[in-house]
Image 1 (cartoon, one colour):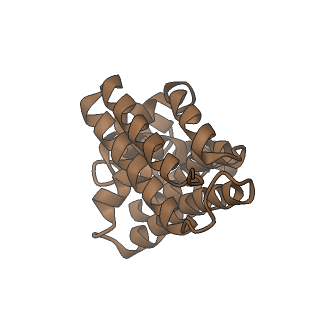
Image 2 (cartoon, rainbow, N blue to C red):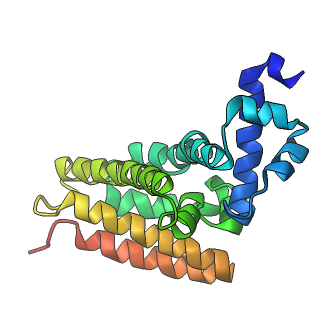
Length: 202
């Protein structure tokens, strides 16, 4: 039955596998549990994926990367003044970030911690996802320069890398502490950093 609609079958497998990986890690994800939760048989799995690792790669590329784009890159693309507008974006974190990300942390960072040193295929794909995120911040800082909100001497790529690292650290600590006070402290320090990138007052 499932193979009569291969696209929907693949999507169901990927969605369920993503949920399992996010909650339990790639190594903790069991294919038989994915199949049980999906209501599918092993034949459906092997029709689409040759191995658990191949499924993990597909989850990273087809579930996690689009999630990153919707949660971070699309909102970033709507900002012109990083110093003023990005902190305001962070204020609505619990409204626009999926609850599972607040509970389990950032899925790409989780996979980076778990699998980047274990599997070259994961490492390459995780690097590409992070670079995509960094690209979004770099474009934001370049727009900020064009609008006079960011100094022209700021290294936009370096600042973008720092922002991704800072945000990932904040999300990771929030996952452990589950404290709104912690997030408020992180938000304030990110705001302070962004102000250092703005034009100097004489």
